[in-house]
Length: 338
Image 1 (tube, helix red, strand yellow):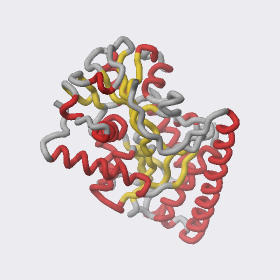
Image 2: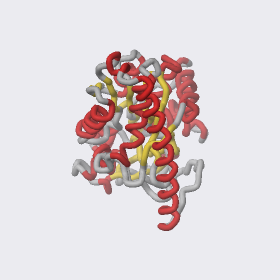
Image 3: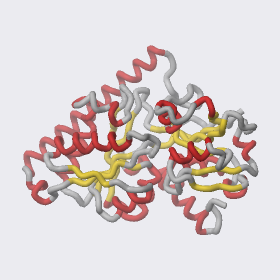
Image 4: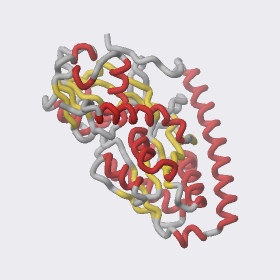
């Protein structure tokens, strides 16, 4: 049987419980949106359009999971919506990999970005409070996290994490939270040294590439992001589901044998050295998106009943500490793919 991580919170079961949780979650988020928008209005009225004269273009990096062939279309939704909301052109920064977005934020090339917890931890280590989280996604059931899943081909003899001893594993990327940082920490907590346990490890570069490499036999297992559920209920989102819907794979050709999580979801972050009026307006606009323009919400890959909720650095403290520990491992001469 696959090892089960300890859950941090109870997931409501049953139709009535799910509907109750959804209504409560929406009421909480709606209240937060009203407060944020009221703050935005106050800031705008007091500072006028001065920030627009200083910041004629807002630059945004949208760090998708690299698991969706339609990611460019989704990014364009953010660009169009925020251009209208902010009253200035929004330009998207496109990076070839996780590190590209991290460096764009850290160096001040962009003003706001969507970035996974591990990426934010990297940015935090580089520039500290020059960057701050604004929002994260809350699912309809109230969850604000997702999971890492160890995935094998359906015909594999591997039934559990223990069966992977001496076998080949593909990570996603060194800067991937779900595809590298978090599952390695979870393995160590279970008494497994990920640098000695597997026969060989490598990086696929992104979630889509990891799935296709597994399908082509380049390694015997990979670690992917999964969400929209729990290990007990199963998952409805993630690269396997996306690629299956696109007809690129048959999801029945793969099996999940181990999970770790939940992991704090992706953050919407901002450079704090930007005009406060712009930051407030962007935060309010993004928080209002599922209510103001509900037809656009599924266009960026979000599910009905989910919404953004306010968070701060404390929400990612565990990820920040895990990254520090991983760096210590690497500096000691371990922690690198063999």
